[in-house]
Length: 110
Length: 243
Image 1 (tube, rainbow over the protein chains, first blue to last red):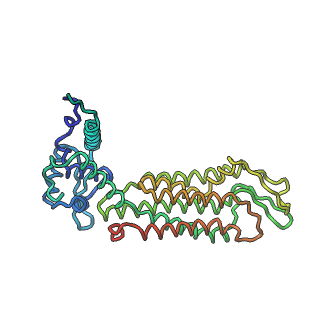
Image 2: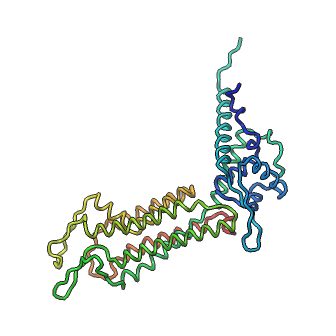
Image 3: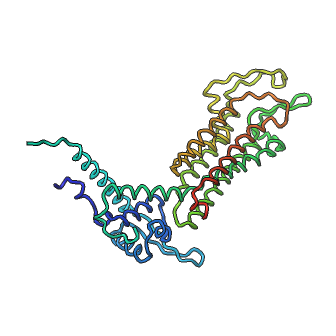
Protein backbone atom coordinates (compact mmCIF):
# COMPACT_ATOMS: atom_id res chain seq x y z
CA UNK A 1 0.00 0.00 0.00
CA UNK A 2 2.86 2.36 0.78
CA UNK A 3 4.05 2.11 -2.85
CA UNK A 4 0.81 3.44 -4.26
CA UNK A 5 1.47 6.81 -5.98
CA UNK A 6 -1.55 8.36 -4.24
CA UNK A 7 0.37 8.11 -0.96
CA UNK A 8 3.08 10.36 -2.31
CA UNK A 9 0.70 13.20 -3.11
CA UNK A 10 1.24 16.34 -1.07
CA UNK A 11 -2.05 17.82 0.15
CA UNK A 12 -0.71 21.37 -0.23
CA UNK A 13 0.24 20.87 -3.87
CA UNK A 14 -2.49 18.41 -4.86
CA UNK A 15 -5.10 21.07 -5.37
CA UNK A 16 -6.08 22.44 -8.74
CA UNK A 17 -5.54 26.15 -8.02
CA UNK A 18 -2.29 25.73 -6.08
CA UNK A 19 -0.99 23.33 -8.71
CA UNK A 20 -1.93 25.95 -11.31
CA UNK A 21 -0.06 28.68 -9.39
CA UNK A 22 3.01 26.48 -9.18
CA UNK A 23 2.84 25.45 -12.85
CA UNK A 24 2.62 29.11 -13.93
CA UNK A 25 5.40 30.21 -11.56
CA UNK A 26 7.60 27.36 -12.81
CA UNK A 27 7.24 28.32 -16.46
CA UNK A 28 7.29 32.08 -15.85
CA UNK A 29 10.18 31.97 -13.32
CA UNK A 30 8.60 35.07 -11.77
CA UNK A 31 4.93 35.93 -12.00
CA UNK A 32 2.85 38.87 -10.85
CA UNK A 33 -0.33 38.61 -8.76
CA UNK A 34 -2.50 40.15 -11.48
CA UNK A 35 -1.30 37.69 -14.13
CA UNK A 36 -2.08 34.76 -11.82
CA UNK A 37 -5.52 36.18 -11.04
CA UNK A 38 -6.36 36.55 -14.73
CA UNK A 39 -5.06 33.15 -15.80
CA UNK A 40 -6.63 31.27 -12.88
CA UNK A 41 -9.84 33.34 -12.94
CA UNK A 42 -9.84 33.91 -9.19
CA UNK A 43 -10.85 36.74 -6.92
CA UNK A 44 -7.98 38.59 -5.25
CA UNK A 45 -9.01 37.24 -1.84
CA UNK A 46 -9.18 33.64 -3.02
CA UNK A 47 -5.83 33.82 -4.78
CA UNK A 48 -4.31 35.49 -1.70
CA UNK A 49 -5.45 32.58 0.48
CA UNK A 50 -3.87 30.00 -1.81
CA UNK A 51 -0.64 32.01 -1.98
CA UNK A 52 -0.52 32.16 1.83
CA UNK A 53 -0.85 28.36 2.02
CA UNK A 54 1.98 27.91 -0.46
CA UNK A 55 4.15 30.52 1.23
CA UNK A 56 3.68 28.93 4.68
CA UNK A 57 4.75 25.60 3.16
CA UNK A 58 7.84 27.46 1.81
CA UNK A 59 7.00 26.40 -1.74
CA UNK A 60 6.85 29.95 -3.07
CA UNK A 61 8.54 33.24 -2.28
CA UNK A 62 6.46 36.41 -2.34
CA UNK A 63 8.06 39.76 -3.00
CA UNK A 64 6.14 43.00 -2.77
CA UNK A 65 7.29 46.16 -4.43
CA UNK A 66 6.35 49.08 -6.63
CA UNK A 67 6.61 49.72 -10.32
CA UNK A 68 6.28 53.47 -10.54
CA UNK A 69 3.41 54.20 -8.17
CA UNK A 70 1.74 50.86 -8.79
CA UNK A 71 2.09 48.20 -6.09
CA UNK A 72 3.18 44.84 -7.47
CA UNK A 73 3.38 41.40 -5.87
CA UNK A 74 5.76 38.96 -7.51
CA UNK A 75 5.70 35.22 -6.90
CA UNK A 76 8.63 32.86 -7.46
CA UNK A 77 8.88 29.14 -6.90
CA UNK A 78 11.43 28.11 -4.26
CA UNK A 79 13.73 25.11 -4.75
CA UNK A 80 11.38 23.12 -2.50
CA UNK A 81 8.49 24.31 -4.68
CA UNK A 82 10.24 23.13 -7.86
CA UNK A 83 10.83 19.72 -6.30
CA UNK A 84 7.24 19.50 -5.00
CA UNK A 85 5.85 20.34 -8.44
CA UNK A 86 8.09 17.75 -10.08
CA UNK A 87 7.02 15.11 -7.54
CA UNK A 88 3.32 15.94 -7.92
CA UNK A 89 3.47 15.62 -11.71
CA UNK A 90 5.42 12.35 -11.43
CA UNK A 91 2.85 10.96 -8.99
CA UNK A 92 -0.06 12.04 -11.20
CA UNK A 93 1.54 10.30 -14.19
CA UNK A 94 2.10 7.16 -12.13
CA UNK A 95 -1.53 7.22 -10.99
CA UNK A 96 -2.74 7.49 -14.58
CA UNK A 97 -0.43 4.67 -15.62
CA UNK A 98 -1.68 2.42 -12.80
CA UNK A 99 -5.33 3.12 -13.66
CA UNK A 100 -4.70 2.42 -17.33
CA UNK A 101 -2.84 -0.80 -16.55
CA UNK A 102 -5.69 -1.92 -14.29
CA UNK A 103 -8.19 -1.17 -17.04
CA UNK A 104 -6.31 -3.21 -19.65
CA UNK A 105 -5.39 -6.14 -17.36
CA UNK A 106 -7.25 -9.40 -18.24
CA UNK A 107 -9.97 -10.32 -15.77
CA UNK A 108 -10.50 -13.91 -14.62
CA UNK A 109 -13.99 -15.29 -14.26
CA UNK A 110 -14.62 -18.35 -12.12
CA UNK B 1 -11.65 27.41 -11.37
CA UNK B 2 -13.36 30.45 -9.92
CA UNK B 3 -13.70 29.02 -6.44
CA UNK B 4 -10.66 26.77 -6.38
CA UNK B 5 -12.43 24.29 -4.14
CA UNK B 6 -13.26 20.60 -4.19
CA UNK B 7 -9.87 19.36 -5.36
CA UNK B 8 -11.06 15.78 -4.85
CA UNK B 9 -13.25 16.23 -7.92
CA UNK B 10 -10.16 16.68 -10.13
CA UNK B 11 -8.87 13.51 -11.68
CA UNK B 12 -5.13 13.11 -12.36
CA UNK B 13 -5.95 13.50 -16.06
CA UNK B 14 -7.71 16.82 -15.43
CA UNK B 15 -4.95 18.12 -13.18
CA UNK B 16 -2.24 17.27 -15.70
CA UNK B 17 -4.32 18.81 -18.49
CA UNK B 18 -4.65 22.00 -16.40
CA UNK B 19 -0.87 22.13 -15.83
CA UNK B 20 -0.22 21.65 -19.55
CA UNK B 21 -2.77 24.26 -20.56
CA UNK B 22 -1.47 26.87 -18.10
CA UNK B 23 2.13 26.18 -19.15
CA UNK B 24 1.13 26.68 -22.79
CA UNK B 25 -0.65 29.95 -21.95
CA UNK B 26 2.41 31.27 -20.11
CA UNK B 27 4.68 30.33 -23.03
CA UNK B 28 2.43 32.17 -25.46
CA UNK B 29 2.40 35.23 -23.16
CA UNK B 30 6.21 35.16 -22.97
CA UNK B 31 6.76 35.14 -26.73
CA UNK B 32 7.92 38.25 -28.52
CA UNK B 33 9.34 36.62 -31.62
CA UNK B 34 8.65 39.49 -34.00
CA UNK B 35 10.95 41.91 -32.18
CA UNK B 36 14.32 40.08 -32.56
CA UNK B 37 13.53 39.43 -36.23
CA UNK B 38 12.77 43.12 -36.79
CA UNK B 39 15.96 44.17 -34.98
CA UNK B 40 18.16 41.86 -37.06
CA UNK B 41 16.48 42.90 -40.31
CA UNK B 42 17.32 46.51 -39.39
CA UNK B 43 20.91 45.59 -38.52
CA UNK B 44 21.28 43.82 -41.90
CA UNK B 45 19.85 46.80 -43.80
CA UNK B 46 22.10 49.29 -41.96
CA UNK B 47 25.06 47.07 -42.94
CA UNK B 48 24.52 47.93 -46.63
CA UNK B 49 26.06 51.45 -46.45
CA UNK B 50 28.78 50.12 -44.16
CA UNK B 51 29.76 47.49 -46.77
CA UNK B 52 29.58 49.96 -49.63
CA UNK B 53 31.18 53.04 -48.12
CA UNK B 54 33.09 51.71 -45.08
CA UNK B 55 36.86 52.06 -45.62
CA UNK B 56 39.07 48.99 -45.56
CA UNK B 57 41.03 49.42 -42.36
CA UNK B 58 44.20 47.37 -42.75
CA UNK B 59 44.30 46.46 -39.07
CA UNK B 60 45.78 43.03 -39.70
CA UNK B 61 48.28 44.14 -42.41
CA UNK B 62 46.82 41.90 -45.10
CA UNK B 63 46.85 44.48 -47.91
CA UNK B 64 49.41 44.59 -50.69
CA UNK B 65 49.86 47.58 -53.01
CA UNK B 66 50.44 47.18 -56.76
CA UNK B 67 50.96 49.81 -59.48
CA UNK B 68 47.78 51.70 -58.86
CA UNK B 69 45.76 49.22 -56.91
CA UNK B 70 45.63 47.55 -53.56
CA UNK B 71 44.56 43.98 -52.85
CA UNK B 72 43.48 42.88 -49.40
CA UNK B 73 42.66 39.40 -48.13
CA UNK B 74 40.38 38.49 -45.30
CA UNK B 75 37.24 40.19 -44.11
CA UNK B 76 37.16 43.97 -43.94
CA UNK B 77 37.82 44.85 -40.26
CA UNK B 78 35.33 47.73 -40.60
CA UNK B 79 32.56 45.27 -41.50
CA UNK B 80 33.66 42.82 -38.82
CA UNK B 81 33.69 45.60 -36.23
CA UNK B 82 30.25 46.75 -37.37
CA UNK B 83 28.75 43.27 -37.03
CA UNK B 84 30.31 42.55 -33.65
CA UNK B 85 29.14 45.84 -32.13
CA UNK B 86 25.76 45.76 -33.91
CA UNK B 87 25.00 42.19 -32.81
CA UNK B 88 25.93 42.86 -29.17
CA UNK B 89 23.79 46.05 -29.19
CA UNK B 90 20.95 44.14 -30.88
CA UNK B 91 20.96 41.50 -28.14
CA UNK B 92 21.05 44.21 -25.48
CA UNK B 93 18.00 45.85 -27.12
CA UNK B 94 16.21 42.49 -27.36
CA UNK B 95 16.92 41.74 -23.68
CA UNK B 96 15.65 45.21 -22.69
CA UNK B 97 12.48 44.69 -24.78
CA UNK B 98 11.70 41.31 -23.21
CA UNK B 99 12.44 42.50 -19.65
CA UNK B 100 10.29 45.62 -20.05
CA UNK B 101 7.44 43.63 -21.54
CA UNK B 102 7.79 41.02 -18.83
CA UNK B 103 7.35 43.69 -16.12
CA UNK B 104 4.37 45.17 -17.92
CA UNK B 105 2.62 41.82 -18.35
CA UNK B 106 3.55 40.43 -14.96
CA UNK B 107 5.14 37.27 -16.27
CA UNK B 108 8.86 36.47 -16.29
CA UNK B 109 10.91 36.04 -19.42
CA UNK B 110 13.06 33.06 -20.42
CA UNK B 111 15.20 35.22 -22.73
CA UNK B 112 18.54 34.99 -20.87
CA UNK B 113 19.88 31.82 -22.61
CA UNK B 114 19.09 33.33 -26.01
CA UNK B 115 20.88 36.59 -25.26
CA UNK B 116 23.90 34.82 -23.73
CA UNK B 117 24.23 32.41 -26.67
CA UNK B 118 23.69 35.25 -29.16
CA UNK B 119 26.43 37.43 -27.67
CA UNK B 120 28.77 34.44 -27.31
CA UNK B 121 28.22 33.55 -30.99
CA UNK B 122 28.86 37.17 -32.04
CA UNK B 123 32.17 37.23 -30.13
CA UNK B 124 33.07 33.78 -31.48
CA UNK B 125 32.26 34.94 -35.01
CA UNK B 126 34.67 37.89 -34.61
CA UNK B 127 37.41 35.65 -33.17
CA UNK B 128 37.02 33.01 -35.93
CA UNK B 129 36.99 35.70 -38.65
CA UNK B 130 40.25 37.18 -37.32
CA UNK B 131 41.77 33.69 -37.05
CA UNK B 132 40.73 32.94 -40.65
CA UNK B 133 42.46 36.14 -41.79
CA UNK B 134 45.78 34.72 -40.63
CA UNK B 135 45.00 31.05 -41.32
CA UNK B 136 42.83 31.06 -44.46
CA UNK B 137 41.21 27.75 -45.30
CA UNK B 138 40.79 28.76 -48.95
CA UNK B 139 43.77 28.81 -51.34
CA UNK B 140 45.17 32.29 -51.95
CA UNK B 141 46.17 33.10 -55.57
CA UNK B 142 49.92 33.22 -56.14
CA UNK B 143 49.55 36.54 -57.93
CA UNK B 144 47.06 38.64 -55.96
CA UNK B 145 46.95 41.24 -58.76
CA UNK B 146 45.98 38.76 -61.47
CA UNK B 147 42.64 39.63 -63.06
CA UNK B 148 41.94 36.14 -64.43
CA UNK B 149 39.02 34.36 -62.89
CA UNK B 150 40.28 31.47 -60.82
CA UNK B 151 37.86 28.86 -59.57
CA UNK B 152 38.38 28.34 -55.87
CA UNK B 153 37.77 24.83 -54.67
CA UNK B 154 36.89 24.66 -51.02
CA UNK B 155 36.20 21.52 -49.02
CA UNK B 156 32.94 21.06 -47.16
CA UNK B 157 34.61 21.68 -43.79
CA UNK B 158 36.11 24.96 -45.00
CA UNK B 159 32.76 26.04 -46.46
CA UNK B 160 31.05 25.16 -43.20
CA UNK B 161 33.54 27.12 -41.06
CA UNK B 162 33.33 30.19 -43.31
CA UNK B 163 29.56 29.85 -43.38
CA UNK B 164 29.21 29.58 -39.62
CA UNK B 165 31.52 32.56 -39.15
CA UNK B 166 29.15 34.76 -41.15
CA UNK B 167 26.94 37.20 -39.23
CA UNK B 168 23.78 36.02 -40.96
CA UNK B 169 24.41 32.40 -39.91
CA UNK B 170 25.19 33.52 -36.37
CA UNK B 171 21.79 35.25 -36.23
CA UNK B 172 20.07 32.09 -37.49
CA UNK B 173 21.86 29.79 -35.03
CA UNK B 174 20.85 32.01 -32.11
CA UNK B 175 17.24 31.96 -33.41
CA UNK B 176 17.27 28.18 -32.89
CA UNK B 177 17.96 28.87 -29.21
CA UNK B 178 15.09 31.37 -29.15
CA UNK B 179 12.80 28.71 -30.67
CA UNK B 180 13.87 26.35 -27.88
CA UNK B 181 13.40 28.82 -25.00
CA UNK B 182 10.02 29.90 -26.37
CA UNK B 183 9.06 26.28 -27.24
CA UNK B 184 7.98 27.70 -30.58
CA UNK B 185 7.71 25.15 -33.38
CA UNK B 186 6.85 27.73 -36.01
CA UNK B 187 9.98 29.70 -35.13
CA UNK B 188 12.06 26.51 -35.27
CA UNK B 189 10.82 25.79 -38.80
CA UNK B 190 11.35 29.42 -39.80
CA UNK B 191 14.91 29.45 -38.37
CA UNK B 192 15.85 26.27 -40.24
CA UNK B 193 14.46 27.72 -43.47
CA UNK B 194 16.36 30.94 -42.87
CA UNK B 195 19.62 29.00 -42.27
CA UNK B 196 19.12 27.08 -45.52
CA UNK B 197 18.74 30.37 -47.42
CA UNK B 198 21.85 31.79 -45.73
CA UNK B 199 23.81 28.60 -46.53
CA UNK B 200 22.79 28.79 -50.22
CA UNK B 201 23.82 32.45 -50.38
CA UNK B 202 27.13 31.70 -48.63
CA UNK B 203 28.05 28.87 -50.99
CA UNK B 204 27.97 31.08 -54.09
CA UNK B 205 31.24 31.98 -55.83
CA UNK B 206 31.12 35.73 -56.56
CA UNK B 207 33.19 37.26 -59.31
CA UNK B 208 31.79 40.68 -59.98
CA UNK B 209 33.32 44.06 -60.69
CA UNK B 210 30.29 45.76 -59.13
CA UNK B 211 30.80 47.65 -55.88
CA UNK B 212 27.37 46.36 -54.85
CA UNK B 213 28.25 42.67 -55.30
CA UNK B 214 27.40 41.98 -51.63
CA UNK B 215 23.83 43.26 -51.93
CA UNK B 216 22.01 39.87 -52.26
CA UNK B 217 23.89 38.55 -49.20
CA UNK B 218 22.39 41.33 -47.08
CA UNK B 219 19.11 42.15 -48.81
CA UNK B 220 17.74 38.61 -49.09
CA UNK B 221 18.25 37.67 -45.39
CA UNK B 222 16.98 41.13 -44.37
CA UNK B 223 13.83 40.59 -46.46
CA UNK B 224 13.33 37.11 -44.96
CA UNK B 225 13.76 38.53 -41.43
CA UNK B 226 11.36 41.40 -42.13
CA UNK B 227 8.80 39.02 -43.57
CA UNK B 228 9.18 36.76 -40.53
CA UNK B 229 8.75 39.71 -38.17
CA UNK B 230 5.59 40.78 -40.00
CA UNK B 231 4.11 37.27 -40.04
CA UNK B 232 4.87 36.55 -36.36
CA UNK B 233 3.49 39.97 -35.35
CA UNK B 234 0.37 39.43 -37.43
CA UNK B 235 -0.39 35.96 -36.14
CA UNK B 236 0.40 36.48 -32.47
CA UNK B 237 -2.47 35.69 -30.11
CA UNK B 238 -4.92 38.53 -29.47
CA UNK B 239 -4.01 38.80 -25.78
CA UNK B 240 -0.37 39.20 -26.71
CA UNK B 241 -1.10 41.85 -29.33
CA UNK B 242 -3.06 43.93 -26.82
CA UNK B 243 -0.11 44.22 -24.42
